[in-house]
Length: 373
Ligand SMILES: [Zn+2]
Image (cartoon, rainbow, N blue to C red; front, side, top):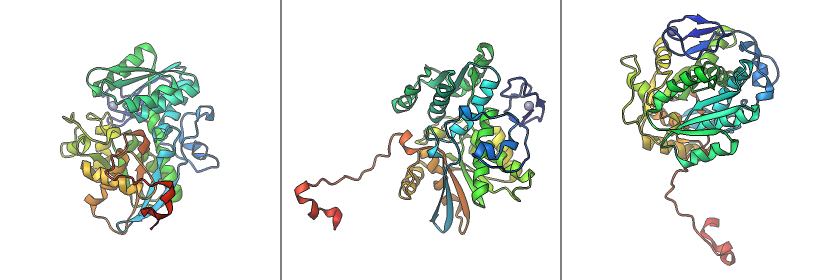
């Protein structure tokens, strides 16, 4: 069954719903219980899926490494999602949504995205042999388009409000029978919950910092922990912190009122979390308030600095992922175990412009070069 995250009404999985037909808030699948088995992450947690998942549609997503680093008096566990097939966590959600698409007889799928998710849906659509339509905003950067083109999806630039495009696409999807597997689609959430499963298997953390845009990832990771707790696998859910960039922080800004509004003049280097009107914003606020958790926004210079610090630990992430480390300075934690969800690769976005110049040396004088001294 689908369950509405706001009004709690239930709807049959036989019909293809994406948002609540009554209150228009996000739907999710009922929580499942089970025990851990063998195999890859989808097989180990097969009890937790109310739809069958065929590995025919997998590109090898999930089961990403967790790297431990010690910084600022804390133990960090870096969940390296940059190692997914299209270099971001989105692949987990796309895999589940593609399974749903096939089961429901869709031969066309689509997505509204500015980057990570577009590449993911284009790749998985190609692999499954589905016609794939990607709607992007008019001012999308060429470097993002170049990650999409190889997969052969139909790409359309749309002029107008990007937040509205999400809702318009769902409407068109209904009339034209195209499954728009957008950011907080209920089946995407099912994919993202595997991040919580994988974390809980390996580490016992006090906090999980989650870069938060549409709210889909945050909801997914929370659902994963909740299901493990309800199954008796873990005793407590780590405190989850929703992290945003100050330049686009509609969820943090709405915390006092509890109701999402459109964030005006959004602008941040963390493009992957630049959604001024997050479709799951209210759903995330409900989770934060229920648990007494925080939403924290970080400055641009803090993001850039954190991106560099993570790279110096050997992991090059996109700015959106670096927000998770940047937020630490606002919390002033010591002796804590903290999981950072590093959502996507730094190669996906324009590289940081380092001011350092690289020295040049003649091969004949190599031994005398500064670098060896
Ligand atoms: Zn509802």
